Each structure stands twice: as C-alpha cells, then as structure tokens.
Amino acid sequence: MVIQPDRHALLKYGSLSFIVVQNTTLILVGVHSRRQEGPQYLGSVAVLLTEVLKTLISLTCALIDSGSGVLSELRGYVVHDPLWVLAFALPSLCYCVHNNLWYVAVTHLDPVTIAVMTQLKIVMAALFSVLLLGRKLGARRGAALTQTLTLTLTQTQTQTLTLTLTLTLTLTLTLTLALTL
Image (cartoon, rainbow, N blue to C red; front, side):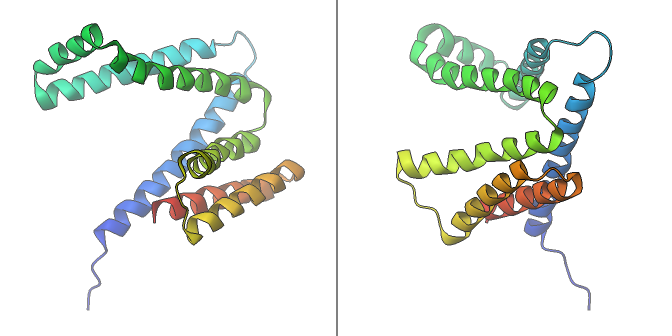
C-alpha cells in the first residue's frame, strides 16, 4: 500500500523550511558582509536597491498578468487619490526605517540576538492585535507566544552559541507552526 503525501502539508512544511533557511542565511550573510575588513557598503543603499528591485518585479508581474492597463490605473490612483498614496506611504516609511535599522543591528549585534529579535516583532504584532484591535488568540497561539517570550528572555541571558541557535530554530518553528495552524 502506497501512502500518498498530503499536498497541503507538503506545501506548508516545505514553505516553513524554506523560510527558516532563508531567514537564517539572510542574517548570517548580512553579519558576515558587514564585518569584513575594508570599505563598507551603505545599508541605506542596500535598502533602496532592494525596494527598487521589488518594485520592478511587482510591476513586471502585474503587466504580465493584467496587461498595460495596470500602469494607467496605477497612475490614476497616484495622481488623483492622495489618501490611497498615504495609506501605502506610512507603512512603507516604517518598513524603510526598520530595514535601515536592521543593517545597524547586523553591524553591532551577534547573529543569534538578531534572529531572536527579528522573531520578537511577530510576537509584538500579535500582542498589539490583541490589545489594540481586540482580537482573541486561541490556546495554541497563546502558548506559542508565551514560549517565544520565554525563549527570548532565555537567549538574552545565555551566551552559549549552540544552545541559543537551537532555541532560535525551535522558536521560529514553533511560532510559525502555531500561527499558521
């Protein structure tokens, strides 16, 4: 008897694994590149180039999907609806500041601390959604948030690299699984 893999589970756990590897690689490469001898690149230029690249990719995908009408529709929103622009400008500004501060953190902190603090923003978003928006968290998500906070506090007191890397991976997997289920 051949057991057929569940496509949904395969997609979910495959995506989770890819995100864990991608985030870990991003932090390690970022730390390594910022600690090299010699002239340093500017974090603000890296953020700008990343945003330009994402914009070009998004516009290309929109053009392929919807045709040239997308550009005139976008132009209409930008020119004639300033509130629409503002609705995107404020989060974009916050995101830009966050990305620039990430390069400062990568320059001055160890990789494990960066990884844990990056995951802490998910916890803070969940807490603010409960406090400000009045949303309710289920028992599983509440337990995941509690474990994340506990592991974060443990990491700040522990300097053993192997233990903190294990805690960070456990933290990432647990939180992501709990928030996606």
